[in-house]
Length: 597
Image (cartoon, rainbow, N blue to C red; front, side, top):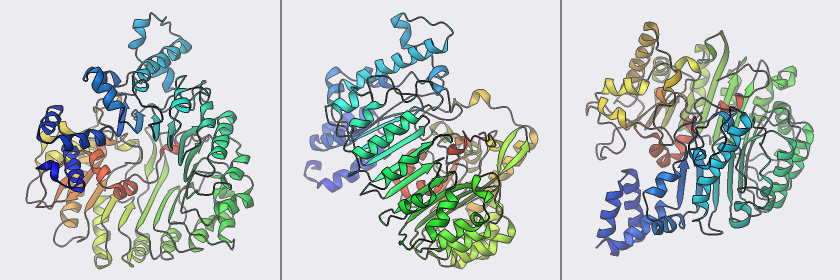
């Protein structure tokens, strides 16, 4: 019977099967019900596969061995032969740098009899060999030319024979269109095994965090030149000291580029850079703490070329940035936002803001704006805390109301406490059409309390805490080693925050609240799962929906708490973009050492 269903219905059933996280036993049962459905499921299930390290303290131990041991050799070859998108990922909760040498355990290397003297070079060699052993098990079963996407998000340098000039990727996976790298910028071996970038000629998107040497920059420029006819998306983060003069010339020659994201990129030739960014084909632009970025935006706003951006994101420091030395730059961002009217998504992260109302005024120039994210933070002179969220001042509430008066904004992200947010939104409720509301906190002052556990306890769903996992499916033990016990004041303060959040949710999802609201998110999601214990997502309760990935909260409440954030974000991509906007990680390695997460 199922074999006769249209493919569209089979795909819908597949989505449900994935969403319910069925076991291997259930997969076998499905194969007995419908051979056609089972073949479709296997094809889609293994189209994208992610191998991960379960802890950032053992990055040389991936879960590839678990995958191999649970399958027969014939099934390994069959399943990996279906892979089109291959990803290697790891958590980034504590360790940001020097991950290659110190984030390792003596696991696989013991069997090779390698010397384990307490020397960084020996540790690094063992680390690379461990990774290479595991990668070989995977690469040996992939079909040549099958991969269209390759992600390396371990935060380490790549082993040899992967992206070298004669490495596996350029030699055997020459059809890759999406390449994303997150390497260790402090590793002395960084950039030494990436010369194969020159041989990839079908790329549509290139992401790399972080480029630290002139050799790496040359590789990127060469890669852009070889893919000038196909590249559509570029997302690059640079070390602050990198001089990247030839980069803008190369960008100017990319015919199909529509999305450009730059972090710590040092603009030098301002007028040339402005002309490059003014290319009418660019639809999305992100600038994160780029020196002289406001000067470039000021020039850009005065050009006659039309600006057709639909997405714009910027992170700036109004007290310590280079741009603050210029008087004209003080209003550069507002002038830029006022010079066109096509934005649908505007994300702003301001450190040490001096004149915040100008950004709300700019929103009125974009009648089609659907998403507005505005986060602020300030430096705190406290040895226990490096930075703190700066909540929106009361005098800005009228400007916020005007910005929301058009009713076009559907997704909103702000730095507001729940109790303040409730008072704010009650004051101009008739104008609200918000579907996604995110109240963000940031900084280490919120690490000492497990808000998700407290929410479940309050909602009567303590049993569901064990089902929590982070965005990558890792166990929640990585942070426990350094978390101190909070004092009584902190416990009471955070308990009050939970009470205020539930009070906001009861009103917002209730009969007198925001009729259009579907999602309420609380906490900092911009750094993945680093602050996962303080992250909470509440959704409007659907009486027709089952308990899929939600807590079994009391039926008297008009909302439920999301248990599996990764599943939820897969289904709500637009909400994920809003909730995770304006990441703080690009500020971690700032040369002035003001911010240290």
